[in-house]
Image (cartoon, rainbow, N blue to C red; front, side, top):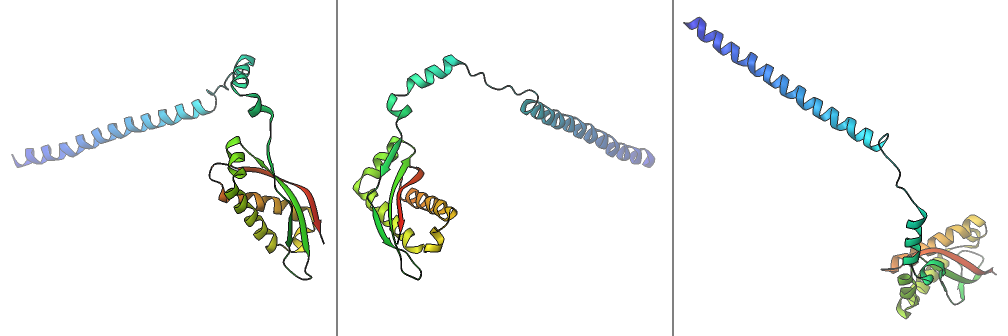
Length: 170
């Protein structure tokens, strides 16, 4: 009788092990199948959306003429600023800000934003030296810096690009 009890207790772990193995195998097949489907759907099964002329026409007609063709460029008054470093030099600069949308253009037109933008630009120029602005890379870096600084004060608008219409260092 003692021997029968031992056989019953030994049989339970073997059956439990077989059940767990079967459950893990089924779970493994489900995970592998899901992963295979995701790879298929994102590579071989992916189809590019069909873009037809009719769809483009409806998109373009929904936008007004103002939004489609007019660039939003705000031209600031001329700056005359002392540059940093020795010997002391001044820069005379006229720049235009290309805004990403109409909201940004209207925001930069407000007197408060315009004054803050001028202040940020003057501070950036005061930190620059002649050697910083001498090369083309220096001017490009200045454009990026001005765009970043003006973007930091705007809440709705985004400066897309900065254009120099007058750039004189004396």
